Image (cartoon, rainbow, N blue to C red; front, side, top):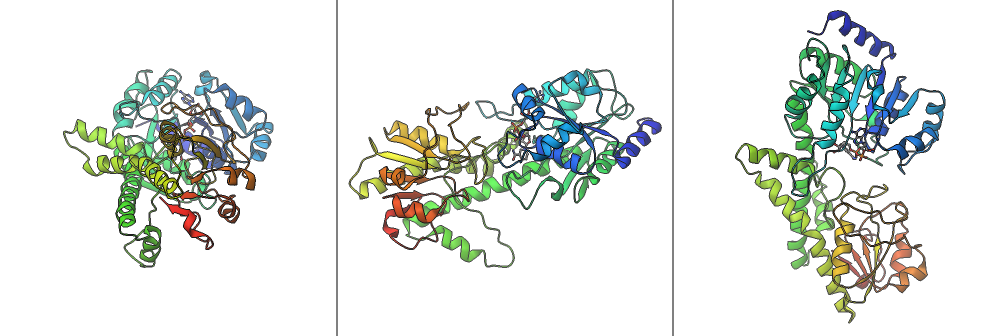
Length: 444
Ligand SMILES: NC(=O)c1ccc[n+]([C@@H]2O[C@H](COP(=O)([O-])OP(=O)(O)OC[C@H]3O[C@@H](n4cnc5c(N)ncnc54)[C@H](O)[C@@H]3O)[C@@H](O)[C@H]2O)c1
């Protein structure tokens, strides 16, 4: 057991909110987490290797569109929030929460390099009595088999010197109903004492803590949540193709099925998966399955179906153009929305980029509008044209041969879109309420 005096000291500082909280990785997950701890009355040391993020925070500015900057300026000024790129300060916080990326490598293997690098930085400064919690999404076993041995290389031992836990982040960026403090937090400790202090910590900040019997259960829980979404989305994507052949509208079917008061949860088809989680996390599990000499068939199949959606959308668009006597080559195609989901500025893994690649191969002339993404970013895995967002004006809409709706941001004026675009391919059923001139609207 960690020395009882150290344990009591940490528990007391958590109770009194004098514990200094360190958050590593100030992105879509880490920054809202800092805010949750600040709002609860703690002080936070926020770490990020990206100097431009630290400079912006120090200037009181947010770099994430749905996170306002008022609280940043205020808490940085009062020194309640201390953003830093200086990892030598990792000995200062009493608690260290790791929120760094967990992407896939090119061949769809887990890329734990960010977690490993961060853990090494912590290990060399780890001091007795600190609590370390991994929040990044990962496969079951990471905390015990990857993080723990690296931390112990620093010379301290879990159980007698420091605490270690896993608690998955369930952030839903841009969802005003569920900010970090309103989402129950699942927590698995490497031992009893770690679970106890981690639970005491999150209990100060979130609406509910859910203790589970191990780090592995907590890790598997997060992957289950995301795999569940990926598979259900794949199912409706496949049904969309089938129903389209039968001239049945999948969205109307889902709306009708949603009236069942039990046993049905609606999922919606789309142009393909996007974001940092759903297209990636299930592959952490299928990789692990292979190590256990199994194939995670549902995951593989869902991945296949979901990643075939952009090609389906393009063939539908070609069909739509054909219906008005036009070809894809040379057609002016405007993409509406390139963020991976509505109302956020996050382009990661957005299907818009695969669609752009396919449309460019077909020699379409591309342009786009996204109020949250003024300029197309460079992407690791896609060849993205260098374009700036067009103004969504009647002139722009009527200049296009076809408008392709990819992301249904709330700010879009669908009446304006439907009135001025001459041909529309709608992958989100965004124009459901438009009743006029339906013949020019193709669902895909
Ligand atoms: N974005 C989401 O909606 C979401 C939701 C739930 C869980 N997650 C998980 O949370 C984790 C973080 O995701 P995110 O979306 O916040 O990523 P992000 O890319 O927005 O932020 C990660 C930050 O970590 C920083 N970083 C990388 N290596 C570092 C290091 N060694 N030291 C310090 N900083 C470092 C990066 O500069 C970046 O600012 C991932 O595991 C992700 O799967 C994400």
